[in-house]
Length: 439
Image (tube, rainbow, N blue to C red; front, side, top):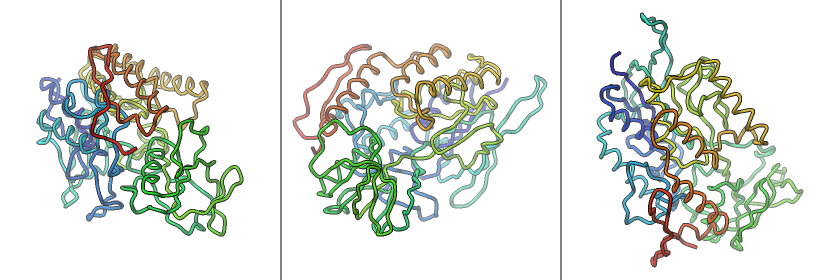
């Protein structure tokens, strides 16, 4: 068998990880082709001042805001074979992460294999009759944003296009009556324009809480509207919690689930993002793609009907870079033949069993792709099957510790610094003398 050709869609962290490990196996794989919509690597970590669309009419991909700092420490975030600079604090700015990914790209000589400013228009399977029987290859049709079309054929495609670019906009009755500004956090960049305004933030996930703190510092009057139990940590006086917004009344005021009513100048939707693969024919691939779900996927990675198509990083509430690393190792082991996949029917049954298990645990369908504490067993399973080392136990231990700190001190936990001592132990360092967070 000749060397396999692999296409990678997206040059964010997942795509760079895939390309790096394909390049490290030159006897099994041809040079990868990485398709990137923009003129840079980094994906969601590349900060764009502008919102809306680029000059070429394509939508701005990044949802990064100016003062974002990571909610996981660098000791947990890093690719296992490529540490962050040791002098950096544990909780990084987006600039630090972007520079890390640029360094990763340069260190592994990935840039020559990236087709920048390139839109992937279609990825479709093609049946090929061979002596060994039927096999599938993939046709990737792309166009340059400045002109020119290309069609190439590959043995496998890695989808690494991320899922933080297409805002999920909830349906709120009467929205046409709202007289203020409505925006999604995808277009939020900094708090100053909202100073002294009344802002209802809808959603209390990581971004909703973080942005609410930023707005409070800019002296906005913030109402954090969500459907979770009341947040247990103390909030600044400028932030009050409220039930979910259920309707906009004819006079433009907001009606909350508990019957209370409020006026607001800004409605900021921190309501998450939708999975979006406009270049795939979902039906042809046997996939159901909803805003919150991609199914069925065997091992949260590949459609049973087309096991040479891999979706990297579909899951949420994970350690992203170690997660990508494990998925890439497994996917390449499948392509190399060191992992023998079960039949399509068995993979479909296992994916369905996993969905049923989550449903029986009381997990809503929209949360089926959230891993959190289950990610460690998942990495161990991939590692055992494909014969690579899973994340060290210290990564799980520190991840869980940071989760506790985040719950207890959401405004202060990013001041803490950590150090990995060995494979099982981490050390708490003194908080830096120079403030690294505005509390």
